[in-house]
Image 1 (cartoon, one colour):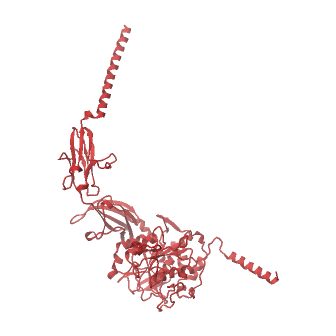
Image 2: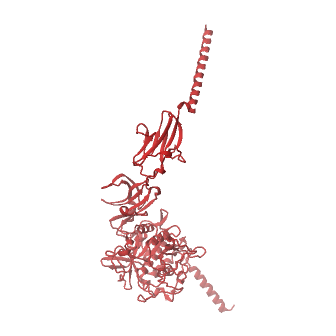
Image 3: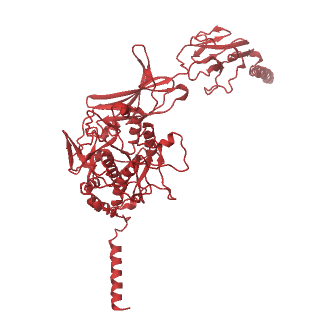
Length: 633
């Protein structure tokens, strides 16, 4: 080997050794991307606004071996062009490499596919939104640790989103199969006009409240230049949702962005560079170009990545606690953290909003942040039941033969601005009420639990009020939701008299006749009447004559009969003012004489034997005594 070759060899070895020692020991490596479609990420105007360079330096020092499973962002949108180069290694896949995703609209409308149809629509809205997240994840080198799970929730061939499809998508995203930590919804609907149901729909409100218990829900505020005081847009304005407004290159709220205190944070929204239709096509970096991606739909996914990054930080730092089986930060939740970043502020009117800066997300001491908590002003409750119609339009309804568990969630307002510790101070009460013509009467009231979640199971038919109370100083904030459990109509052909077993259960096969001995007793019951209103009067009859309480014992649906005389008896009943139970639905009871009772005969025999035995013993004892006296003389 020549001297030159030896020098090159030594130099190469030195470079390799240096490279090895430069690797952080005990840490999983991150991989950084350079350019996308020929555009350097660091050349984009919002690169510095988000402080990406600083964030990359922080992430590079993490011990990512502590991350046992990726943080998942569910993207509820119009689908995705999964073959785009930007999504390589970023989307959720199974062990075989098959793309995982969900078509919510198809699922609830019974459409079955061999594979899940995630095809994006012609606008490529879902692809653009997911692309914003993918580019940030790749730039931070975290594609192995933050994954995107696409959910197609729009109607076929349109970029519109039915509420039932969105609610189903939320349930799927936060359910056991996906367990998303973040849910992105770059969609919005006005509280006015035909879309006003997005504000009032109880199923949507409950779905969002439930999902927000385990995930950060991020939604776009919309692009109508509207203040939330005059026209709010949903779901961004709903409780428990992180509403995202947008700012432009000037650093000020963009003119088309909706704004107001019902929303939470601000992120870049003009000329956001992202994936488009083909494998390697991208949007324009010029916000005025027709292929540009603008608006709060583009700002929301930036916030979603920030939320996933915050969750990842807490995993790496070991600061998550287990609450009800879910990993959560102790003290304050992620939504409140993100809306209280010590970052640059954007003002609009008299309001001031936090912007998203990734380095602040990764370094701020949230345990000692001054959140400037406000006093609670209101408490609201949502439930997962079915609302009735007409006079029951504000009441959860069900039938007495199909009683289901109702889950109620309480929300303390203003959202994200009150001390989270107040959540455990919420008290739950259940009242059973009797509905009157002019006013209702409370039959009973029971305290049943604490916290922001309560599960209610009605014990029987009737009307109930499930109330949440929060005591704050001298004030008591309270609200309740009504539950109506409909009794079934009385059907004479389904109700019969039968006997009641020792364990309080109806005797199997509902027998209609039997026999006992005089002096014994038997308890009768009405079967087939389980789901009617048993508070209504029930009369019992023996051989057609009404039984008066006191002569015999009866309590509503049961009757204890103790005949003293042998004979044939027919036991029947009458519910309310309906016709008496008759014919095959009565019970024929044969009462046999006491003397024919085998037990009675056995007792007589045993008694006789005892008497004879005693007599014999008495005679023997007498004879023995006489003999003893005779010997003594």
